Length: 226
Length: 290
Image (cartoon, rainbow over all chains, first blue to last red; front, side, top):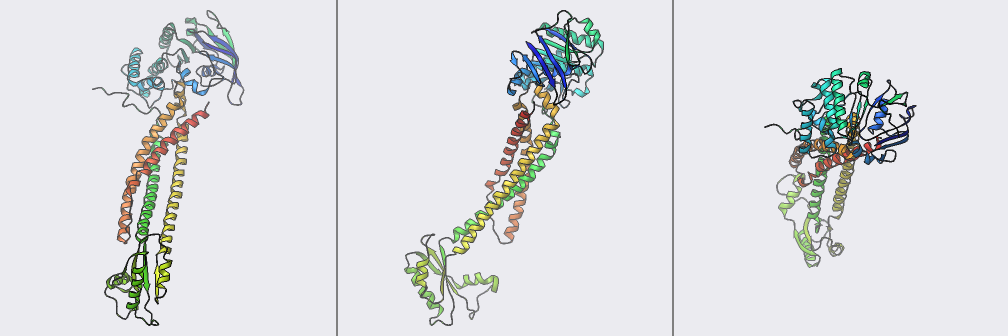
């Protein structure tokens, strides 16, 4: 479903932050993305959620070659990718409901349909009473659930999470990973960037380990390969 | 009854509280006011001059000077001129100007009341031509034999009026173009500034799958709403100021004809310009992004 071949990324005229990245993620897989700070995890995620195009190499996502893909073809691809950002990136001027509804509105879904989906999902993540609140009045854990709800509202084929357990305690982190496993069982491909060694020990999924912009594959059960 | 959250939702991009939301209504209001006044004054001036022109076209005035050297008295020469004019196939009517009307004409200089008998005032004959475009050369030739007779079809004055009207229209077009250009530049700068201010929101919208058209629509709708407010405010001010100007002109004895039908042109133009510019600039700027 996702294939990287000899991918390199540099910002502007700076040095390459990712070098010769080659891996493949089959549909329905679950991977951890690990590595020390500054190893390039966020850059690799940015490539995966199509915020950047690579400087070199080949990226194939859902059968589409990213290097040759015209700009107009990106939104439909992005609508199939859900992202949980490290800092959540919720819009403070919008209500919880409007934040979660963003991907549906962007995809042009009818409002009444979107309303019922969003309300249902927010109830499922335990935020049924917070529909009209602003994110600023929510706790960190609640904000994270809003961010997750926004990431999965479109039933994405690929879910990316950048350090989702960084700002929450171990209990919530565990619940979060169980939630991701549940989504994975429903067929969503998942990539979670994390530093949390305890979680990595507990959840035995293959790792994509980055060191200084290079990918060092480590298998939990099986290492991903082309 | 619970509120419908989607109907009452806030704008996806918080443009209401930025530069475009705070300043644009006033900028549009000022530009609408200036452009509306310009247009109404120019159209009013053109219409007024046009009506003056049409009231003089096809008319001529024969003036017979009181000459001491002439063997014939003035009244006799007036009679001769009338006979010549009535005999001409070019003339529809010829009427000598009555003494009271002559006194009215000279009142601004000589004061109200009848003219003194010993004042050497020329006699005037008001001539209506059959065709407005008539060449009065044959009439000039016919009247040449009458001492002190001159005919004027107001051609020079009409030419000046026409030139004044054309100059008025030109000035109006140039100023309106400049105001339109200034408005476009302001709109372009404000939209670009707003895009920079909301770069993070715009990036997030892209990442959740929004198309450039979706984002441009947010900007267009906001600019549409804001510019409607500004254009309405500017139009109301323009009407008030125009009424004051018309009152002043009327008191000065100058009846300006204003066609209010032109008034909606300017605010509608600015609203359309704001919406189009917002959509176009947003799409262009987003296309420049990676």
